Image (cartoon, rainbow, N blue to C red; front, top):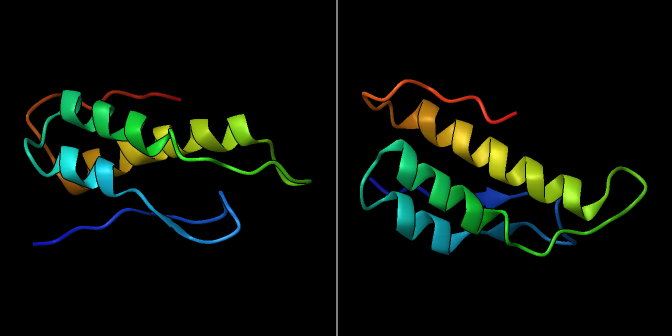
Length: 82
């Protein structure tokens, strides 16, 4: 199976977080998900009237982490990051 992580509404175009994809595909566990979320959150986000860049980066990190936990259930308990 191939999974891709695309980031919308954070830049002028849809972005792909390929480094994050490489990290989480190795070992599906919470520590790996956290590292992948950090890499995804390093993308250059834009600031506009809807939200600031820092808020968008934080949402990328949180939603990536939670999404990976939902897609790849692991034996570790879910951790809330929000």
